[in-house]
Length: 271
Image (cartoon, rainbow, N blue to C red):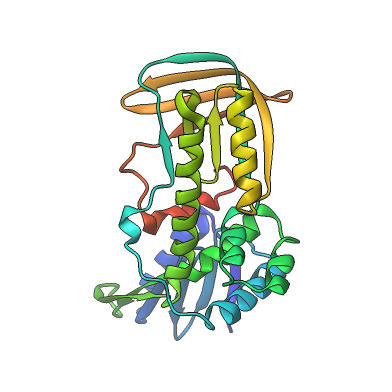
């Protein structure tokens, strides 16, 4: 019988050590969200987070929809998830943040790939679950086979054949964000996945709003304050005040997030 546990550093190490000492061969299966250990005496799945039943139900609906369409052809290594125009330390008293809502789901829905029923069901999920159920399209599993001495004897990878539907959504949103960047003009600061940050320019904000409405992308606008940018070792560190709360994050080096890592990065609670 398979048991499910939340992953901690302690129980993951203890479980691996236990199975190594057992003298039985075993297989470790590492996916985007779980690590599973399979042997004659143990079958356990260690989970990074617990996804809701609705999340898995949404994934089933997504799979049903996308299988009705040809698999998109693209090179995911050329996809961009962020960009910036920071060249030195900077400070801005106020900055405008325009965020697309349910961007990836909306992209696939607008293209006719997701049905209205699936899209509406996904809208009931939390942001993390909404990203996760779409990210499951690009799930990967690495299999590590160990003998009774705990020695690695084989390794193979299993890739979801539907993964390009997820990356197609990324590709669509990349094009949208590139167009928004052009509309920002000299007021552009940076792009983060499905959000753009710019200096306050009413004309640019109006143009962007008209563009997004025309393309049928719902969005939100927030004014951020005390926007401080520091460049340290080629990494951009940003902090700002949103409402009454200080926000901190770091824009990674341009080469540090590849397509294969992006889903895990994006669906972390602290991302």
